[in-house]
Image (cartoon, rainbow, N blue to C red; front, side):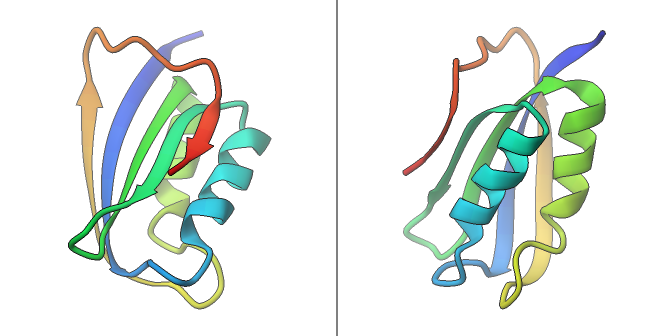
Amino acid sequence: MTECCVHALVTGKVQGVWFRRATQEKALQLSLTGYAKNLPDGRVEVLMCGHSDAVKLLSEWLWQGPEGAQVTHVELEVLDDYRAPSHFATH
């Protein structure tokens, strides 16, 4: 079982549409840890850690997001030697 952490920056209409909460719900369904938080520039920052297959699924879901979201870009970066958090939080 391959574990990994991926950092994502999601651009578009992603604030004020329950994006962080929906991301948290999806992450918990996939047994991932990390966080989702709004950035001052209107993007949402997401950290997802766990089994690589589950991280891939959430990474793909970020392009869609919840109803009402209009994602225009998702930037992904695999983090090497990153200590995964114990839960998934929203900030």
